[in-house]
Image: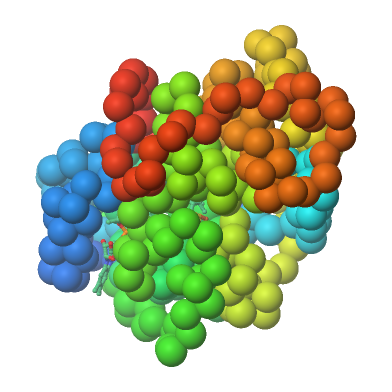
Length: 352
Ligand code: B12
Ligand code: SF4
Ligand code: SF4
C-alpha cells in the first residue's frame, strides 16, 4: 500500500474520524508497542489475574500482526461517555456503573468504526475494526496513539475527558504518521489504590480480576459471590466505578458527552435492590434492551442484588422489610477473593 493511497494521509483520516463523531483519534505503529507492555501482560496472566477469563491468554493480544499481518498503522479512537448524573447513596438502591447506563457502547462504537472502515476501504485500504471485540489491548494502543495514559487505576485517562472514555481501533495497511505515546500523569497520587475496597489494584495499573467487584458482578457466572467480594459491594451490582470516582483527573476533566445514546436509561440510575433481587427474564428484557448490561444474566442480577442486600444488613444499614424478604444466600463462604471461581460455564467473552 503506497503511503498516500488516494491522498489518504494522516490528517485526512483523522479529520474524517472526527467528522464521524469520535472524540479523540490517534495513530500508533504496530512495531512500537512497548516491550514492557508485553512483559506486563505475560506477568498478569502468569499470576492468574485474569481469573476465569481464559480468552485473555490469546497470543494475538501480544502481537497485533497475528491479528492482521498487513497492519502498518493502528487508529485508536475514543468516545466520551460521561453524563452528569450522580449515583445515589441510599441503602435500598443498587449502583450500576456508568459504562452500562445507556445504550451498549459496542454498538455505538461499532457503527462509527464501520463507517470509518468502509470509507477507508472505498479508497483501497485494508481496514478492520474492533471495539473490545477482538484480542487487542485497547488501552495499550490508546496510550501509544497519544489518547491518554494507562493510569494506576487500570484505566486510560485522557486530558480531555478523564477516564470516562470507551476505546476502539481500526487496523489498516496504510502507512500513516504516528502520534507520540502519552506520558503518565498519576504522579505520587494513590487515591484509587487506597479507595478500592477489595485491594484489587495490587500495584499501580495492575488489577487482579479475582478481587475486582467489576469482574465478579459482570463476568463471574457462579451461583454465589466470594464472601470477601460480596461483603464489600456497598450497593454495586453491575460493575464498579469507585477507583474512577475518586480520581482527581476525573473530577477535573469529566464533561458531558454529546452522544445522546449514552444518556442513562431511566431505570438504570436508581434501581431498588429489592426489584433486582427478583428480576425475571421478561423484566430483564424490558430494562436492558441493546445494553452492555445484558452480559449480566437475570440470575446474576438476582445474585448480585441479594448479596448487596445481605452485605448492607451485615453492616447494619437500614433497609426495607421488602428487601429483607428477598435477601438470599448469595454470599459464598470463601475467605479468599483471589481464589479463581470454579464452574464458570460460559466461555462467552468480550473478545468475539
Ligand atoms: C479484561 C478486562 C477487564 C477485567 C480486568 C481489568 C483490567 N484492568 O485489566 C475486568 C473485568 C476487571 C474489567 C473491569 C473494568 N473494565 Co474492562 N476490559 C478488559 C479488557 C477486555 C482487556 C484489558 C486487559 O488487557 N487487561 C489485562 C492487563 C494486563 O492489561 P492492561 O491493563 O491493558 O495493561 C497492563 C500491561 O499491558 C501494562 N502496560 C500496558 N501498556 C504499558 C506500557 C508501559 C510502558 C508499561 C510499563 C506497562 C504497560 O500495564 C498493565 C499492567 O498489568 C478491555 C478491552 C480490551 N480488549 O482491551 C476492557 C476495558 C479495559 N475495560 C473497560 C472498562 C470501562 C472497565 C470498567 C471501568 C467497567 C466498570 N465500570 O465496571 C472496569 C474497570 C476496572 C479497573 N480498575 O480496571 C474499558 C476501559 C476504558 C478506559 N478508559 O481505559 C476497556 C478498554 C473496554 C473498552 N474498549 O472501552 N475489565
Ligand atoms: S473497579 Fe472497584 S473493585 Fe475493581 S479495582 Fe476499581 S475500585 Fe477496585
Ligand atoms: S486516583 Fe490518582 S493514582 Fe489513581 S488513576 Fe487517578 S491520578 Fe492516578
